[in-house]
Amino acid sequence: MKRIDARRTCSGTVLMFLLLALPHWAHADMDRWVIDEEHFAVGFLVDHIGFARVLGMFLRAEGHFLYDPETMVIGGGEWVIHTDSVFTNHQKRDEHLRGSDFLDVERYPRMVFRPQRWEPTNDGEGRLTGSLELLGQTRPVTLEARINKIGRYPLPLGGLFSRPQVLGASLRGTIRRSEWGMTYGLSRGLVGDEIELILEFEARRQ
Image 1: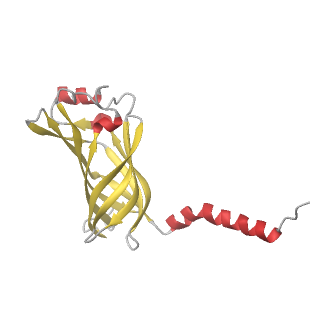
Image 2: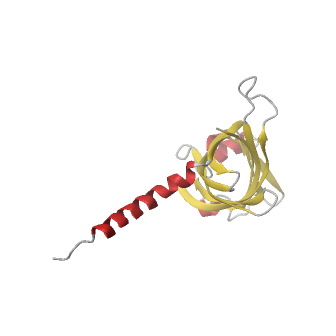
Image 3: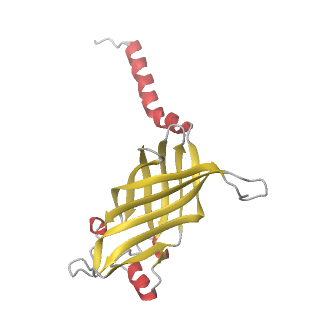
């Protein structure tokens, strides 16, 4: 009968425990930041028949993420955009965008970005990589980002003496809607494939 090395078995068990616990330890010292919905702008630009680009936005969005300003490491999060809140200042166009040709809001009421990795370059700039869930499909997306400022808010929020730590950021990126199966108007050149994303937010440290 083959002998079992108790020390090796114990060491293997401890190692497995450490590996499983590592993500929790890595995130233990990270601050949780909640995006202020009143200071969360989600916009987009898309070509319209080659004449000009339509500027639109989503009026309802919220989100949170884990981030350590000292190590500049992000530990995940979730930013939710409510697709039925799309607004381009044109009622019929907005109704069309909510339909099955585009956002199909009845079946997919949420579009979700999950930040996964922050790669800082210099002066607060860098690349934020994550995944975008849209129309039931999830694909990687990289945003060019800039952390504008981290500091104590100069105005009271939620109380006379409440001046939380706030992180403000600007993000830009481009996706191809066809990669998520949104192909209406492409063959005739009515609506562009590339969507320029524009995100601006202020997040409070919890």
